Amino acid sequence: MTRIASEVADALRAGGPVVVLETTLIAHGFPPGEGIEVGRASEDAVREAGAVPATVGVLDGEIVIGLNEGELERFDASARKVGPRDLAAASVQAAVGATTVGGTLAAVRSAGVRFMATGGLGGVHRGWPTPPDVSADLGALAQTPLLVVSSGVKSLLDVPATAELLETLGVPVLGWQTDELPLFYAARGGPPVSARVETADEAASIARAHWELGGAGLLLGRPPDESLDDVEPLIEAALVDAGAAGVHGQAVTPFVLSYLHRESGGRTLRANRELVIGNARLAGAVAAAFSA
Ligand code: PSU
Ligand code: MN
Image (cartoon, rainbow, N blue to C red):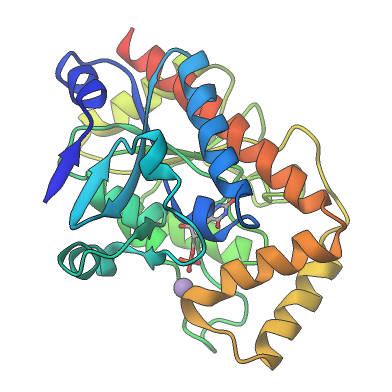
């Protein structure tokens, strides 16, 4: 059911550095065509940092760890969004399945990969418990021994509530050269992290110690290089629009991201692109430090 690309399998067998990347952001987080470019650039960034990239998705009845160039191009907006609950059905039904952070973690659970990168982690949606929408990313991270590099939690969420839940689940939240959990587009103003780290070596050592203790997932929050500090009013407007249009569940995040990309005149799009690639580069560096 799972196919691991040979370069990835070789690296894993040798204990070498591997970073998994997800496909939901490629298929549903960017306008048509652009997501594929971001996916390619993220793979390049992982390589430049000295690690092997492995982009994950469901294709032709298989869970693939390490999509090749041609396979990656099939992840357009028509792909099914695949969280942990959807992996089995998507593979049996031979869907093109774009895995979320949670779906990707569930897909690689038994493969021995230790590092992943994404844009922003899912979490507790605003207004909880109406609707009672909490991303499956959190449960998957609590169960899977990988370190995920992201620009914190997606800002359309209730970020403080998400940080509380991560603590409850025992997930370390490390801050990359920061004391605050980044807010996706904005670098500052988030809740405190559980530990600040200064170097890739330090992050890798904490991950190793956490796993030796029998711990599972960790989050490493990297602030965006260029902070956008005026997006909050747009997010609020996007959420009102989503509510009025009856958008809920899995459709909320893609709806809000495309609203922001449109209404910000492309500023959030550029920021999102840059932060995803930067996170991939950092995940590559931490993976390389871990294997060294
Ligand atoms: N980061 C981005 N864009 C995205 C996502 C992350 O820059 O689209 C995706 C991830 O795949 C994450 C998902 O797992 O959003 C969360 O969706 P939900 O809230 O429905 O669980
Ligand atoms: Mn959800």
